[in-house]
Image (cartoon, rainbow, N blue to C red):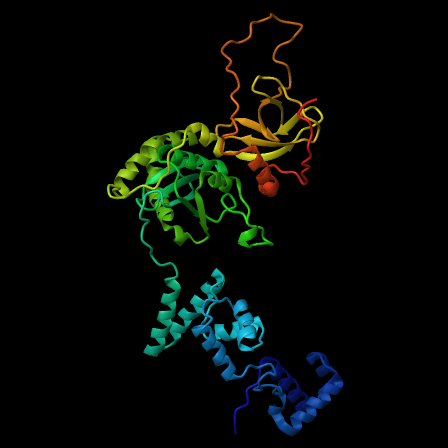
Length: 476
């Protein structure tokens, strides 16, 4: 006689009905306990008397589902993926099967078939890989077969070697890896160290401390690179919105948009490559690992307690660090482009935003009101709602672009500094220098900037919901 094994719910029904029959108990109480009708209880009593315990086994147990895919088709799907479509993700693979092989199955069915044979999608999430790795380790502990252990170890090795080692770049300036590290560098609060390292030589080419990881920190590092070395070929960074922005609903490359930093790099001709994988930019990650074990001690011994003191100390420390850890670049050629002057750097590494002229012929920026001033020092008036492109240069200077002209911005104080009616009359200050407004030869021409701001205004710090680009006279 074969042994009959029941599942938990089936075992409960069997015990209740068996007790009911043996003791001739109350059928209504049994129906309440099993959450069924009295008629169902009578049917189970009859089945128990005729077939015994076997009656409580569900009728579909052991049967293949109606939608079950035949074993030959399953093997064919696995073989097609391994030999022909191995680079495709599971959704794309199901579309290709339907289009090319006339195999019409759902994505979930295809996914279950491939996962049951330890095949992961190229787009598998980190949690999926982690769960798969844990299952492999459990299987390795439970198996005793040398052959099975070798197969499992090979699969584990494949997971570990997803980020293979690559050689350094051939030329200095070919790739600059850039990132920021949040750590207790000095004092008792965390600060961010922005740093950049040359991939070919391992030399730190720029570094600065800030309270937070911001655009200003990366601009300062870029300024140091431009001043000390020149224009590099490429920046390799993580996938932060400071460097790259893609609309979530439109993740295609064609609909990608510029950020402030990427637009500045575009003007300088610097390419930006981003990656969300730390191992892809291992040079900068290992640099922070080294600095976190060395730099806090150096800062503590020097008595550094503020960010200004830390940045001042970095100048001398970077030179010592590069002497000890960077490679000799005697035979390494440099592809840094020609160094540019400080004025061009200040104008290129700028923050661009959009404003409109109010009824008082002024604009509001950072909760302060500014008037537009020409090179001669005279205020220039515009109609209300005239669009103005505000450019905040790296040296904190504010400029305004209206149509094809550039003006200086002068803050309007809350109170007059001197009274026209009271106080002594003084001679005008002869030391005040005349205003210097950049010519149209600067890197960000107003026509280009206006078009750029119009396309990317949603991604700037200060934006409006709608922009009205209408032509008005420049002054009354």
